[in-house]
Image 1 (spheres, rainbow, N blue to C red):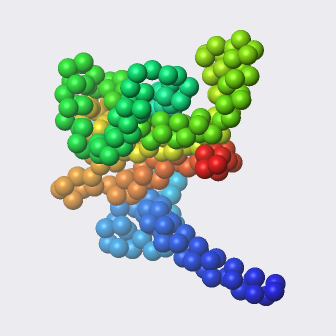
Image 2 (cartoon, helix red, strand yellow):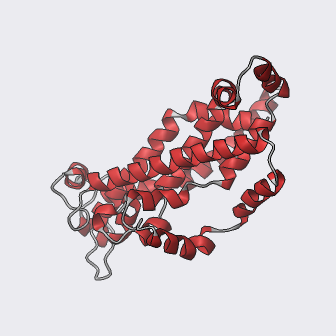
Length: 281
């Protein structure tokens, strides 16, 4: 019995290891390239072992005097990305939980129609909305601003739907008990609903942080100043078309750009898994 159990575990582990290798190899290759000099990369001599320029390359990238793009260092790019990502993450979470709370616990005309409209936006890809959204942002003078980079992205039908499903799983007896105790809607939300939603909020925080950090199309359209670029946009602008791209620095910036989302996932892994499990109940 135990031998059969061990044998049955071997195949899933082999498949898992192969999957990890396939996913991780491009990242490892990028890291190797970031430790080489440009001559080794251009002549295909990177190999699979980190090179001798690891310290020099990363010190050059992280130096405040080093301009990744004209007039802007990597620290400003990381700060821009962090500000935009946090605005998107907290904005999406706040709006989604409030809208879901209103849909589940309040009675108002066209309640089901309002949720249906929110749900239908799930089927609209951002490319369809990009032109009218850009025009609206331009009319409101939001170009080249953190508001312009974040506000058009903070509405989330997916997060609203997840919160709605979670709120519907909360027993009605809690709402009735709160009403008997004289708690109003705000107190019930603050003292009961919000504490019960901590795990799903944490899970959504991880998902939305990665979503906001990896935004590419909208920041590319809404910004015209180098000082407002994010780290993801900088990666594309570091690539020149005249064959002078510093690939060792590009790969180093790419590796550094991955660190904040990885840190968030590692730090919130326990809450992330718990939130996903609770949301499926």
